Length: 113
Ligand SMILES: [Zn+2]
Image (cartoon, rainbow, N blue to C red; front, top):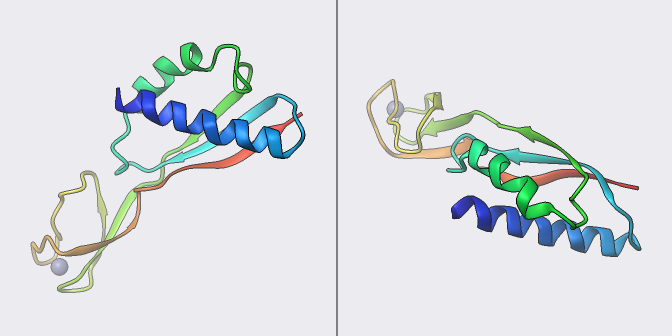
């Protein structure tokens, strides 16, 4: 259900953009969904076509980028890649970290025609 609410909010933003451009249909949409954003890409793709039928995104091609998770340890300063949000620092084992990337969930680009 989480993916459904994401799809719905993407659709709302897209509709707003189309309105701002004075109408049209979206040809292509590029999304950035970080590996740490907690989104099941497969589920999102699965509900996408159903959800977008007869909307401005009905015929849009979808491109998804999945930025890797990266964090900087607040204890020793090591920058490391993360597979899961609760991964600890490989250098010192600390759980205190600043997330640098991987939590993105946004529309990068819309091509409207
Ligand atoms: Zn550390």
